Amino acid sequence: MEPKQLTDAQNALLAKPLPKEAISPHPTKKYLSTIKAIYVVERLNQVFGVGQWFINPIAVAEATEKMVVILSEFRAPDYGIVLQAYGGNDNPDRGDAYKGAVTDALTKIGSYLGIGMDVFKGFGDKAQDKPQPTEGQTPEQTLHYNAFLSDIKDARDIKKDLMAIHSEALTASKKGEITEAQRMNIVALLSQKKEELKANG
Image (cartoon, rainbow, N blue to C red; front, side, top):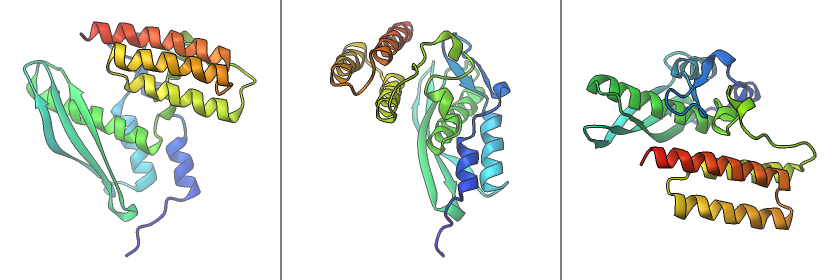
């Protein structure tokens, strides 16, 4: 049987911003926001139906004294959707650490489907504290800017990743691919990300 296609209504629901109650400040990184997993579960139930999707931890990628990292797989069989994501947690209680890692992977998978996308782009409940894009940008500049936001979020190395993004942003600004205001926003976010990476060792 051919898998179903998501309807326009389902796609709209996936992209619909989560309620403000779903977003809270990160417990240790106050300049970041986190999504409460139950709201992702609720949205998945609304879109796919209760019992019509599941998430399965398929591998333990790492389990040290301080951190548990797992690989989880999401499936919505009726729609032929299969997604994978890593999740991690450093709770000292081992059981809670594994559960937290699964939850972390679930929110990441939700972002792949469009759930909470505004938060992952950096515009959650703490958005008022962050640099924002300015008016007057073209759709192409917005796309380029959002790509930089995604790269910053995924950056793991200060010299290798952040310096490269900084250089690319300068080049993109000179070419008109992003506005100068967007470039300045990117520089500010790079500075925040640098402090985050330093704090995490």
